[in-house]
Image (cartoon, rainbow, N blue to C red):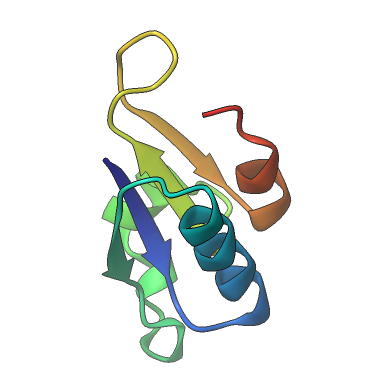
Length: 79
């Protein structure tokens, strides 16, 4: 399962389309950028530069959770 930290932006839409097209199971975790939630300490642990979208793959390549941020990096992630 992948957690998608998301707000409806063009880059966020890219990632949701990617996840749908690849049929990967994911859950959307809303991060309201209008309220500044991308600066919360919990989100900064996932995306240290406070960029959206971000994902956490709970079963990463080595079996451990892996966080990836920014749409380009997410689209290249070899899940």
